[in-house]
Length: 517
Image 1 (cartoon, rainbow, N blue to C red):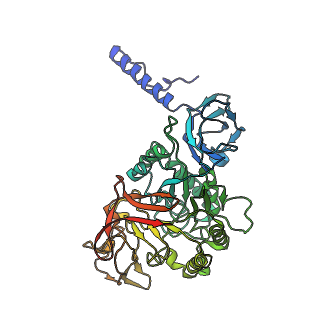
Image 2: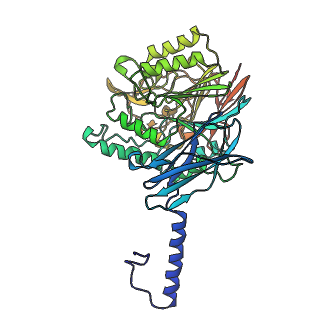
Image 3: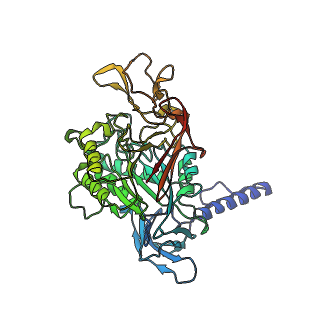
């Protein structure tokens, strides 16, 4: 049997070296305990929580068999779920369904893992709570646009404290571009699909790996749950281009099926989702919807995998019909469309909803014709410091979520050179109700957009302010609080302080949207 000392240097001479060796052995032993084989390497996390069900996700470092045991608070028996095979085919991840739960009840659960050699390990308990049958209030946080695993996100830590009912992440949960060949703007050749699969899995693992700066924040927000007073927070997530395939990805990405498969392995979408095997329309994607009682309905969009500019479609026929049907059926007071790109047609019109005017008009006309009230858009993608509109410019009330942890050279992403004239800088922040009075990319000398010097370029005229707040002013998140009669949406700094900007008349104003039923 190989021991810790096998292959080490010859035994030390003298008591000082013996003591040093003993201390090193103790340290290594402690590390081995901290990384006990059989414990999840990632997670566990909870998601898809309803009044009577939930799901749990975890990943291990190797093959085996896993089983969940869960129990409602108070007296009563624990319930064992079925055994689930953990295999390399799904990157050693497992999803555990918890049916037949009681509404508004706190549950604890543990995961038992049996290795191939027969060793059994059980992790410590985690806790979550099912939805109440008739909720009267709701609080949730929204984040978007993360850089990489090597950059921590104070905004994420703060957005989870105090613990909201759930968290939405609106696209670009990493900018890895897993399908892009290094040092190019091209996809890997299809022959290198294994490389893309590896990149996708590494990206998903790293974002919740406690050994990375962002992963540590992710674990603290969504995994840590030591007592029944520290409930796990359900996460709902929709991808954008950088975490789907690569920058500006659309239906032409040759690795869409791999991205969908890895999403299924690593996330817990709501039951109503576009990844189900029973989709009948021939299109799939990570769109999903869920309800929080009669208070709110949520429609999280996939704006990439079925985007077809030639056909004028961002959502594809299947997802578009799903969205229209869902909006018309919803009986909730508030309806949230969660879009990974901005709905405001003047903002980044070459890549957001402004690039699909017919589809956008169809959605707006449908909402008006069917008298669907209280529809609100939550969007991301532009790496600004936030913006608010009551519908006068965006068509629907919309709040643009600040970036979560971008460096100053990666902010305000609505600059580009005119494709027809490389001397002309195009910058389209769009007009918003609340934001800043100066266009973020043009107030610097030299003009800096994504770290590039545009000072010798002519600048196309921009819209009238307010514009989104400059992303260089800092990351943040959005906090939403609502009840049956009012919804309040606040744009927050990474420290949890409400951001301030300006209105069109130049007066200072909080970046806050208040809507009443």
